[in-house]
Amino acid sequence: MRSSQPRRAAATLSRPETRRRSTTGVVRHDYDRARDLPRLLPLWPEVLADQSIAGRTALVARLRNLLRRERVRGVNGEWSYDLARHRQLVVAFRAETAALRRVQWRDR
Image (cartoon, rainbow, N blue to C red; front, side, top):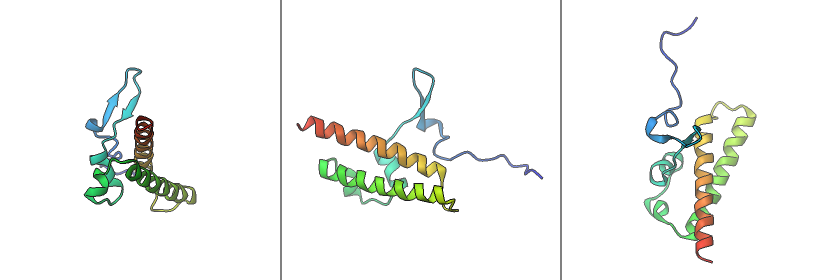
């Protein structure tokens, strides 16, 4: 028996303000550090505002650990696994890693 209520899509990935179509027609998700990171992990405002190499390195390491744990949850089929959260962690990890590389490259 089917429910009369429509299914809900992933809340953060389905919002139009977080999606943007590229020139190739592929939907890509924009990453905003101040908006997205506090939703993914608890951070003090000082940690969020830290743009230094050491601060970014610590944040990338923390995101890497969170991703590892989320992958384990998915592989093990745990009830707490969330595909939308996993996707958001991947987007944040890639964006923060790229930003760290840019900062390291600029400081050379």
